[in-house]
Amino acid sequence: MLVTQRLCPYLRFALYEMREPLPTSARRRRFGNLLHAAIAAYEQAGRSLEQAIETLARGAAELPPEDAREAEEILRWRHSIRRDAPGRSLMNEGPLRTSVAGRRLDARVDRFDAMGGMRLLAEYKTGLRAPSDLLSTQFTVLAYAAWRVFGQAPGVWEAEFLRARQVVRVPAESDPRVLERRVTELATSIVAGDRQPRPHQVSQCPRCPARAFCPRVTRMPRPFSRTPRVDPQPALL
Ligand code: SF4
Image (cartoon, rainbow, N blue to C red; front, side, top):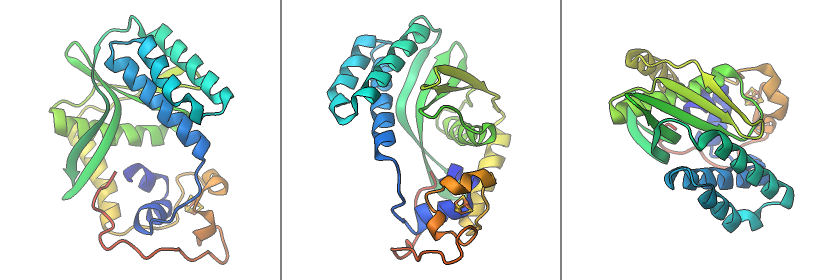
């Protein structure tokens, strides 16, 4: 929710306060979910390609054949770069529960590794790229939650762009005071009810799933189909 607030406060409002069932790509979601599950199985089994392929095979019937093939190629590519990688996995697809600005914060990390005394936070992306400041916002929230739960902020942030077969290091912030200030600012804007249609980048509006409801881009916005949640913020992320 915090990252969506950064993307656009009105989109966050439509999704999490009005709970509008906005259109999403079921095919992309299935592909991402299955790939995440196969990678988690791989890491949990000590970087076992066999486990990853087995997990993929169990869910592959849900995917079009070209997506199943692409997922398997991604797993094999990952294995070629991860097989002898340093460090060991401490958490895979794991929940992090903490709080910020007096509200509960539920986050989920894709992978959290120990590399000697250093900690590495990794996120898997099925898109080909992501705006660097949005990526940084996502890592900031996760690094804050990791610091609160484990007592140590990760010093390395890594985004794996799976379809692009690229691992990108994102400049990491490991000062807990800076992490806390940034996350608190975002959380406070939600708690204060900021729902301005203020896109992070104007170019995202034509593809926005909330555009039919949005007063910024639609002359007669469609009314929401549900009533607002009584407490819009039981969880912030
Ligand atoms: S169309 Fe643009 S301004 Fe409106 S909710 Fe979407 S991102 Fe925000």
